[in-house]
Length: 244
Image 1 (cartoon, rainbow, N blue to C red):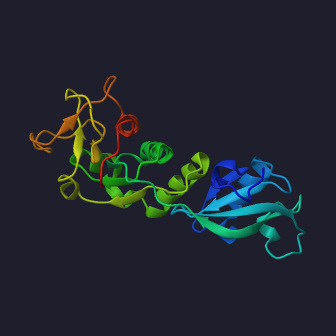
Image 2: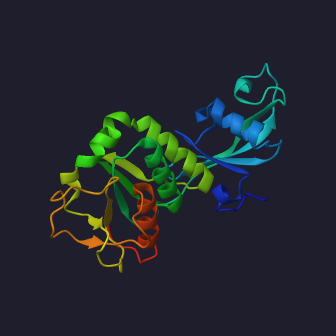
Image 3: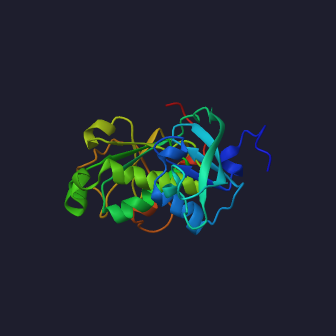
């Protein structure tokens, strides 16, 4: 594959990694284990390294020795490492598509939603505490930003994204002015909302969401929170985009 004139590095490379920076020095031992021990990349194969904010760097697998600087990051028994090629490339941000607002749930389930929403390419994910979610998940106190970013970067590498969704923690009151609530029994979605609110396991408590708030329903039976988040985003993204 000739990467000289390509504008799709991240789609054509042998592997794609989303790290703290678009540089091989930002990779850790886990990244190199995945590249050389799991994916078994060979000399000459190309890797793209992305910062999740549009900057991508092309790198190539090169031979090295255990005595060379940085070789500890490679696979020593094979003598492999990475070398950057040329200058980094910046990709323009995509048009804002949708914000998904998720009630806090157990992180093992929330992790699934975060990863799948990243794969779908949503622009923003906002985590909120509701009356029922606090007792279930312990709220945002049990979810560190570092853990969230690890999930997003792994998912971004799998789906070869150059932009990760922006994740924030906010109060339910702060998001209510912009959300459409996913609620069983409401009308079907017909346009792309600005933001969609997914409740916790067991739903919202009576009176927690005022009756006048816009609502849409999702297909299927009563969905788990992580399933509802993915289904809602997929349906919303099938409609024409709206302005932020």
